Length: 459
Image 1 (cartoon, rainbow, N blue to C red):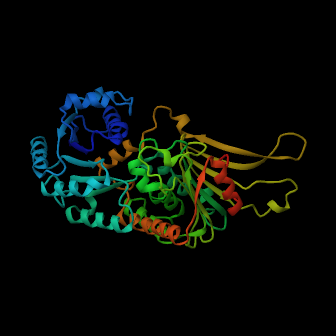
Image 2 (tube, rainbow, N blue to C red; image 1 turned 45 degrees about the vertical axis):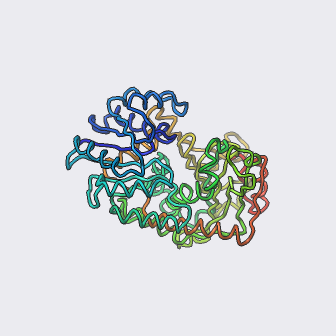
Image 3 (cartoon, rainbow, N blue to C red; image 1 turned 180 degrees about the vertical axis):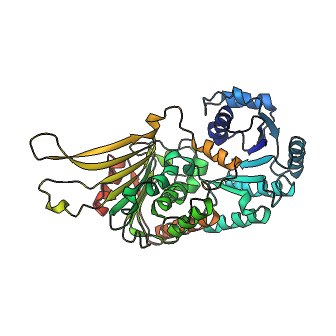
């Protein structure tokens, strides 16, 4: 079976930095058919040679694209011109048959999504019910619940649900995929993954860089929409879900949705911030109130996790670039009786920059004295598999080609996550939650410590 991947937005950052390298790696590993064809769609007046010259001259990626040159063809298209889509359809029809897997990837801004989706349908590039043809959409999926609902209804007008792939690239990361294995594949956690044994959970995505040149997108989004609504809530759902009936796509999604339905947060815990200098970034309005930092305490009101705080923290211009989940267990029944201080056990699922798992335990210090130290059982997956760690988009393309949807979000996941974020945005306006301007992340961590008694510094 051959595969045809059509990428709208082929001159953009995402395509050059992530999508093309991912496809190239899959071809080199022979995980995509050798006859895979990629149509790079753009509005610029390029031919294929000029397109590759643009890609290779770009400073966005240092990838060697030479292996792709036999697979990629540039196709100039005006997104508003239906005849251009029909011409693309004619070209694809010449080299495809009923068994050809056809993936249409929209690596474009949300403002172009409607026109492209409509014209893909009207030109019969994708016909409703064709199991071999699908459309893939990047986040953000809307700007709030109402706009997301409008987009989704539009898509359902043109495509079946099984033809729609909504990407949250975090779900393609190795350790995000590994959460279920850690939870359900180890007996030591089977009976301790609940509110009797777990004291709190921290979900952290820190970035040390600023917004760079993403002002046009970021100022309309902010940390809540850009990170919490998608990445952090997806991680929370995987940590908080019940045991699924099976590990197939729909059963997994059903349990994730139940978590999001039962999710609430403490508005008194909410801290939003904006790094000093944000207003001086290029193309940022001088009166912008967009948040670049969010902290909140949430709860999942299910029998398994009722009462356990989930601390969510994400932001830019922080102390380091790091993504992790920390599960802190309650003190043991004998801990208070111990004559030397003991620490609570902590399971850390490290997502970036180095994928891995750590478990902190109490252990006696070797020697004649009765002293205790904290030791860590540390498995760095990325360290042990140097050169063999796939990028998230490699896994996502592979799953798209094989019609696997476990790592893609279903509409009701998006619906319930927007309900949660819309409530937070509503509270910010209604309760006049102040925007903290921070020079350094320590100011934020000290504020969290003062309010919640929880440490986030040096994590």
